[in-house]
Picture 1: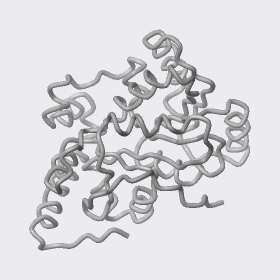
Picture 2 (picture 1 turned 135 degrees about the vertical axis):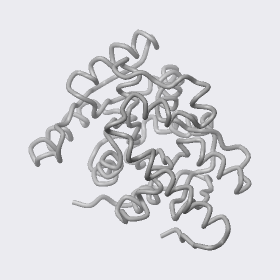
Picture 3 (picture 1 turned 135 degrees about the horizontal axis):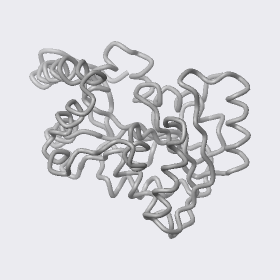
Length: 264
């Protein structure tokens, strides 16, 4: 069953990167918008756009539609931040999925925001809950669901729906690989009784301590890709050594006017 289109987030302009509309805002603004999900239902879903993801969306039309029909699509990656500044949006900062998760979890304690964790390897969501509740006393985690490494069966999806309805979360944090998590959110957000679904990728592994994060100086300087490539070369070499250079070439063509990438 297809979901209706999500409601657009209030008054947030988007800038065009290779046909993907990236939301022009800062981490603090994104956090505050997410907090407004408290007590609401079925607002939509939030994506985090990277150079790899935007480039992949050129040949994956469903993925591009998913990014463009989101409640927000954040600039997760310094190249997208720099391009946002070039487009005149000086207020933009990087909105890294793990950072947004921490910021929302920390600020949400004062309003009793309700969190649900969907994704991760077996045991990751439990470890994530344990680590975050120690780090952030008062954090309200109301449910967890670890899906199999495949599409959910009808019975599994119904079990997830029942569990979410009983837990009544404001936020469902989705920790899957991309574009699997974005397509899951786009397909099912309208069926789940939550305010927002937010795709945060490897945040479950980072915050649970299962996988190391790049040092902050590498994140700020746009070199996080080098750290991740060095830690997972077999899985990520194609992404960083083939797809990211292709992103650069396509972006230069767009900026020069040699190629147009309309939003659709």
